[in-house]
Image (tube, rainbow, N blue to C red; front, side, top):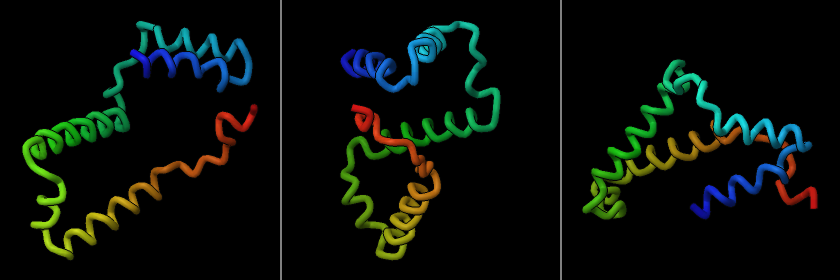
Length: 103
């Protein structure tokens, strides 16, 4: 609840004006929105969430360090490189200023 409350109260500070803030809030509570899996990006997001939950259930009774130590150095290097490349390619590279920069 605290996260939801804080996220909602950040909207007026991030929006460029009051009309934009009201538009964002009204869009959050609209009921006529299209299902998120209607396009390829929504389907990929659902697949990523499902894979994340499956990975969490797989590691529920195991330690990640122990699982990774069984992989060997080559697979650990490939996994770390893949994660770094994923972060680099999908981080967005957004040039907007930090939210508190305006203050």
